[in-house]
Image 1 (cartoon, rainbow, N blue to C red):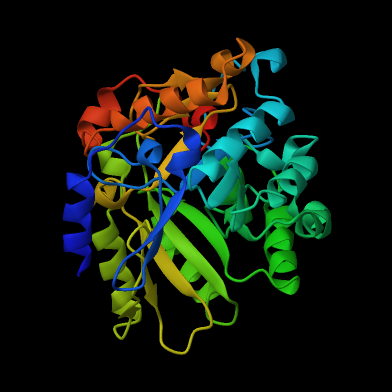
Image 2 (image 1 turned 180 degrees about the vertical axis):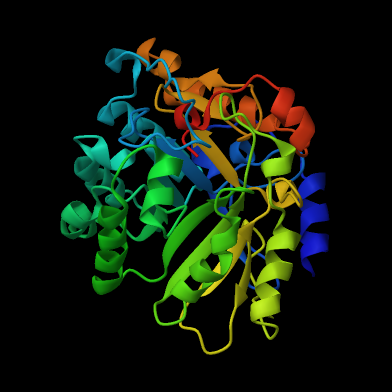
Length: 366
């Protein structure tokens, strides 16, 4: 059976959201040897299975990136209203029990949370969780990497939007370029592979550095990921500032016409390419010009405990309030399942999103 047949069969399955949680955690193996965790609660009405959870650890950040945070800053949630480590672990256990096998820690800047090492170490104990990842701005990375690896971290994504120190400071409104580069080099030296470098491309700001970023992957096992500029509250998004995936690709192909497209997994968000002979590769996150909603397997929990089923949607449900009211696992799972069941087929499109009231990226968690 091909993937379309599998997808059709999933859509036909009756999705019960009130079965006991013990019955949810099944594994089904299809004829093409794809083994998929099956949870009706984490399967939406379009058959998408949500096995990837992104947890924001903090709203605080030591940078002020233009595309992420309004220039005037944001009003932070009082500390007591953010999820504690025990609340994070309660939710993580539930999601992993239902089939989540990858958790990414985001922020804000996750590495400034004092108990980040404890959180990773506790996550590492969860049976069934295959991958623990972090997305970081890299400012504290070199110092923390040995302890992060020892705690159980598997994958690292590092944000870097310019290779020119002065331009870096303009984009992030802070100094620190050399700290980020030190963090990237240390991650490579410690054997993380691939080390992913996230670059948000903005016209008139850094689109002239595309070739320089690709060249980084020549002698290092880096995956440079070019991200289309996305609209969020307070980032003054303008369609004219967005550089589309196709425009970026055409420009890179002028320098490397033999660029090869690599095969990716069904739920991968990046369209991945490689210059023959280069150690690393590049990817494009095409959220605006060519969305990948049909294969989305991601859910998000904000630092203040709200579940977001879509990065670009403005509907949220508070899991924190349920936890603090003494809700049982079954009640939490019912609420999670109902939210997943309401997930829309796709986002509303870049122009509608730009008019929609949503959190700034800093308060979502990427």
